[in-house]
Amino acid sequence: MSGRHGRGLVTAGLVAGGVVVGHALAYALAYPVQAVRSARLDETGHEGFSLLVLLGVLAAGTAILVIGLRSARRVTSPPTVGLLLRLQVSAFAMLELAERGFDLGAFVHDPAVIVGLVVQAVLAFVIVALARGAARAGRWFARPARVSPRGAARAPEPRTAEPVPPDPHAIGLRRAPPCLALA
Image (tube, rainbow, N blue to C red; front, side):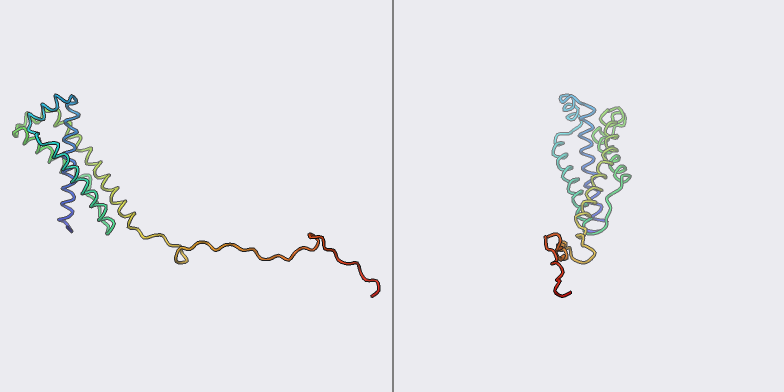
């Protein structure tokens, strides 16, 4: 997986995770009562939705991990907020339109759709922040170990003091009195 193809797969994983997590959050926020939310999800054909959320989270997590690993080997940048914003919002909108049989009236009047569009925008920023964090972490782990300017890192040499000759007055040694016989 290299070049544009690999980068496209990473972006697709981030978008897939953002769309399904945003979709789940949108329905949870728009329909906070579990019974109402379940009924609404059943009406719009969400039988295997929890499995899709799991797969989307795994895809986004894998994409973030790949971004971190790639940035450890070479300089690479995660997708931009603008790119994820465009892809996630348009994918979410197409998904919601398809769930409603491409009925634009039902699409516009469903609170989950309106909330979902806002949630997709917020998630684009969050996902890019996570991806940038993974890229920084990859570069941090790949950086060379710091070496002291003198060469290999060494422990400092112990400091030793120069021997000081003893002070004869301090230890009580006195000079003998002058010898009078010599004088």
